[in-house]
Image (cartoon, rainbow, N blue to C red; front, side):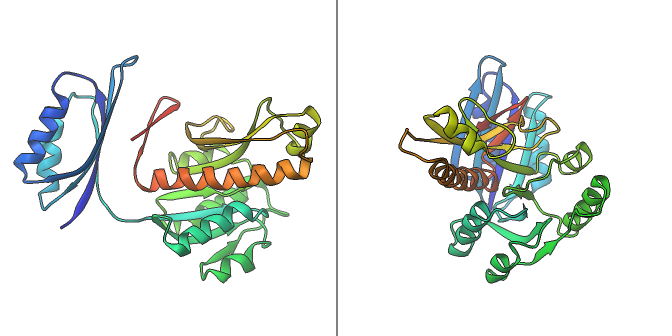
Length: 277
């Protein structure tokens, strides 16, 4: 029996869950799992439901739209694995972790290619029998390079793009072309450090927390909606190299957790925030 994911976000009003459930019941559909959330500050309702059964998709969507508030966003998709493109530069830790999770079946998606601006990680990727494409940015204007990247990615038509320490700032043209499809990972400190060797800067300031943030990519650098975060505690006994290693470990975990949330359609975006159901 086929499974589908039904995602709804709309203005909150009385009777939403009842009305949605009644329509599903009338189509002889079974609710496998269901999660809901209401943001009372903005009067928004969110619902993620996994349903199973055979039905007419067009009729079901028409009935939902006619019953729910006019501003409702309704997404209905078959419960199948999404296709992923990974972008990398030279750092291997996030990429290697995702490749291993993919090989072991922990990642609920298909990695269809890895695209890089250096060939440093070619041997690693090919060990997993995944296509590796290098599009060098050297001696190429930034705009031209990004157009080449867009063309290469479009050839695969992925559902998601993961920046696994892809060390290039993406321009608005690229971001808009793949709107709400790009996931990024970066370190998070208190206080924040930018520029060269942030871990050494953090060590020099004696930080006590090292973290990582996975977020959607928008035209505002590192300010897109946050999907997942985590921290590890450090102390004065850590060298800056120890802090770097700790940071890489938490980056791997946060990125993989965020990716699985997106692969399972558990993330709703509204404003510059996310709701995870």
